[in-house]
Length: 114
Length: 112
Image (tube, rainbow over the protein chains, first blue to last red):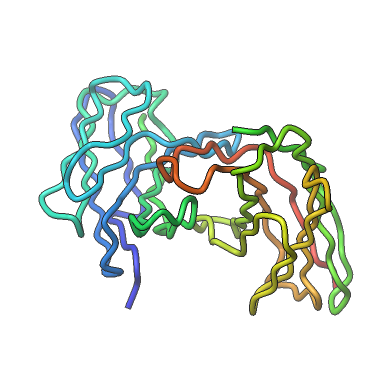
């Protein structure tokens, strides 16, 4: 079983559209994250949730809205997509037991905005 | 968080040890050193972490200098599947996990 799974793996869409990426983890972790990896390969955090509560909200346009229906799921909804949103988006999870950066990542969603 | 510096790329022969250095000269006392790797088109994978003692697990060994200003990740018998980008990150153990930015890293190429 995949520990952190995200769908879809590839997402190609037009500018101005709204899209969602889904993430689920079966590790029993309390904390989930969204990271963005740009074309220069920098992997930067966008959001983190702990037990459905928003913990980290980096400087991200408010077109990006995370939703956590329960602690095993963290979805990312993006409104009015722009060309600059093209990137690979990674979901991750970690146990909220003071284990710092031991993160478990999904396989990524490659978003291409045309 | 302390900044880390890694060489942009390294080569290693298959079957030989790969030694990946990381400089973190501004590390503070409560900060740990973490290593991750990212194989092409996959999400980063946790490898190992340590505070001041050397650590070993099934994937690798981590050697931290006595002054903690640098560390080395050792893959004892590199295989072609170890070709990846390796990231060294320094983080305080109990701060909000996940806030690090994974920087440039070292691209390790294992050659037959």
